[in-house]
Amino acid sequence: MKSGIWHKRFRRPLHPAVRAFSDSTVDDRRLVRYEIMACLAHVQMLKRCRILKKVEADALLRALNALMIRHKTGKFRMKNALEDVHINVEKAVKKIAGPIGDKLHTARSRNDLIATDLRLYARNCAKEMIKRLTDLRKEFRNQARRYARAVIPGFTHLRPAQPITWSFYMQAQVSKFERDISCLKDALKRVNVSPLGSAALAGTSHPINPGMTARLLGFDRAAANAHDAVSDRDFIAELLYVCSQIAVHVASLCEDMIIYSGPEYDLIDLDDSISTGSSIMPQKKNPDLFELLRAKSGNAIGNLCAVLTMLKGLPSSYNRDLQEIKPVFIRQIDESLKCLEVLTVGIARIRVKEKDWIDQPSFMCATALVDHLVQRGIAFRRAYDLVADCVKKSNADVYLFMQLCAKETGIDEETVRRNLTPSKLTGLG
Ligand code: ARG
Image (tube, rainbow, N blue to C red; front, side):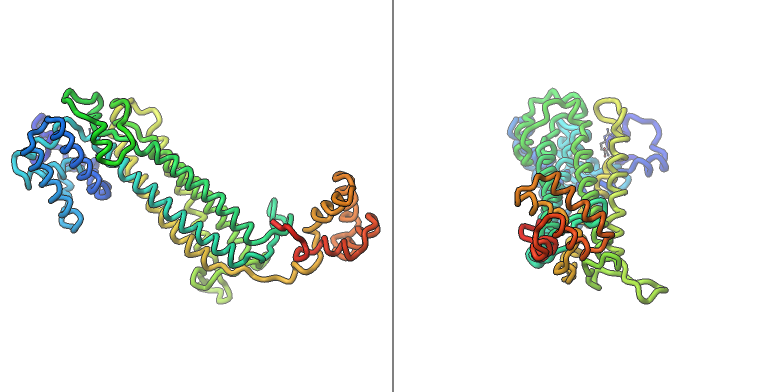
């Protein structure tokens, strides 16, 4: 390959199989915009630091701006033969600006460029994720408002525990996903650091100003150490961890929706527009959407493990292994964004079934009865034992349970009934 940038040093061209194997352009397509942004900031800095003459820098800036327009209008196609986004952009600039294009790579390296591109990309991804999570939160709040008074059984160990409102359950989801938003915001602090100016690993002898490029690219600061900055992919591992945490939250919520919509629980109804049927059993209405979302957590956790394993034991500074992290990261962010979007659609299409069980006495309110006894002055453990004994003797018959409770505690049956009826209870979660 004669058109590359490093082949002068070699006597023979790269074997086609090796060239194809190490090609980075396919994944780099996502990075073109960020590469050009990084180039623009770098050239402006070179100009202000007088490393490039004004006319030289201006010519490069014009070429880069022209290239950005070509990219945005879909007219810039990368060539696989040019290995990666960095060589493709450098060559394109040279084609537009002429021989001055040879000055573009002054005081930089592909190693600090790829780290910069990835951080700009990751910053954008994290912000997109926050937006999707905010949309999802809105839908939880809509549900909470729509079914403010709907009561469902609250479960522990997947067994009926205490009645709660649908609204309370939805607020629990808000709390979980708000933690994810806060993790992303926190991760952004570590993403938003500029590696540009680190060059290959040792910085550069040119009198550059990395703080200036950092500012121009909207980073909070320049990285402290070049040797670390070219290889630091912690921010990717961290974002993949947050993706995994989100995926785990999504999976657990979906598990609930699958269970609650099943005939045994029958608490909610999934709209036809988010349900699927069977090719052989005409009666089926399946929650495939939530099952697929539940499964996606496996991919998310796998991708986190893949990246940590690639990073583990790498010699310090840049190694080509780092290129392999890129597709994993890109794919996972795409998946996470898609999952959040489709989950938001799913949540909006859930209907809570109004049930008459909430007007009947229920064992689920046994704790409420204990609390009532405590309010009447009975010590908690004694009140608990009294009610527990009635549970034991009632043989799962709630009417017998009520009678026994009234008899054992000396409280009138009406008060016992009121305290055992979900719809009559005040202060439900
Ligand atoms: N394609 C490389 C990557 O994605 C860019 C940096 C290449 N640097 C190098 N020394 N080969 O990581």
